[in-house]
Amino acid sequence: MTNAALAELVTELPEGTVVTDPDILASYRQDRAADPNAGMPLAVVRPHRTEEVQAVMRWASANKVPVVPRGAGTGLSGGATAIDGGLVLSTEKMRDISVDTVTRTAVVQPGLLNAEVKKAVAEHGLWYPPDPSSFEICSIGGNIATNAGGLCCVKYGVTTDYVLGLQVVLADGTAVRLGGPRLKDVAGLSLTKLFVGSEGTLGVVTEVTLRLLPPQNSPCTVVATFDSVEAAANAVVTITGKIRPSMLEFMDSVAINAVEDKLKMGLDRNAAAMMVAASDDRGAAGADDTEFMARVFSEAGATEVFSTSDPDEGEAFVAARRFAIPAVEAKGSLLLEDVGVPLPALADLVSGVEKIAAQREVMISVIAHAGDGNTHPLIVFDPADEAMTARAQLAFGEIMELAVGLGGTITGEHGVGRLKRPWLANQIGPDAMELNHRIKRALDPDNILNPGAAI
View 1: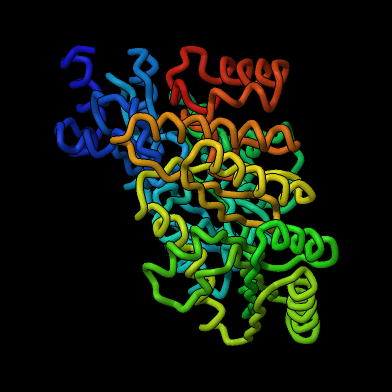
View 2 (view 1 turned 120 degrees about the vertical axis):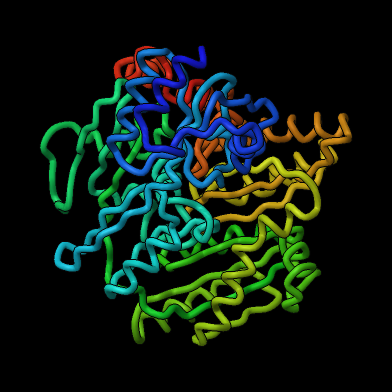
């Protein structure tokens, strides 16, 4: 790529949109997964409008330059890893939002953070439910790229359940509108759903129409500690077989102690597991659900069960669960997973991870959105220790193989990215893999959109 060719792109866009400062470029090489194989981009492009994204993609298509779409850079699977000589297309400057209270929808550009969308719609008496643990720092565009979930998705669903429409710029610069502010619409193929979770490999999302709900009721919270992770996991199956809680979260002993080291909440350091559950059903039904979960925990062998209807007390435990990843990360570098299994296999997955940790002699903490079987094994290692790093990488693959062997998935909400791509074919099989490739070739024949990621 010549300087003259890049200069053509610079002249097509507003001043300052294209960045080539080496120090700034370096800060866009990796997302939070810190892929060690990240390249150095030719430039970072930070558009404000769909038309500017179109100009970028037309230029990239004409010059066969790879483009890596990027949101807030909080991804955990290497989906926004820069490529040598390519562009990083950051949507961080795309921050418009409008709220329609009649249709209960919001039209949002992808650069807004999840928390900012929640706050903006709350001012209109509405609620946007998807709530990744990183909701304060992750972007809506990134949430759509990976079909992010979160703590309340056991009851309220994941990102795709709230996406009614998209505007997407394709590899050749064509901008298409898919769906819209309609709750029921089956005209044509379900292309909106195709782009949600596609990790920037099929197009660049420049606008999204989100479905909103009335505000969530204040939940009642139940916290239980166990001296056995299997007992805690089995309690999950009993609960979800009868009710749908608004939250059902799991932390193992490593996570409990890591959080307690930082937050000093008085958590039980001797517990093997802690469950944080909640119900937001109003009135007697909510109280019945809370009492039911407390009873299930006790009958499953919980060493302590605590219930509260005080929102501040409940939120303190939710905050502890949200803080688990950064707390464990303070103990060393992490390989983060988000494998999921059918709920009956949850106990087998958790105990299997324990065995892998012992066999590979690495610390692995397991936290989970237990209510839907989505777990986050966190492998802690010292990158300066080559032998430990090798063992951690082996454990990383073995955990995904364990999940698939239990009828599960290598990713529930973080995406395949680059770090988990080698294990994708084993899960979905050769025929589905080829179908993925056929769709990719149809929409991006020159493979310039996030090549090497996801599929």
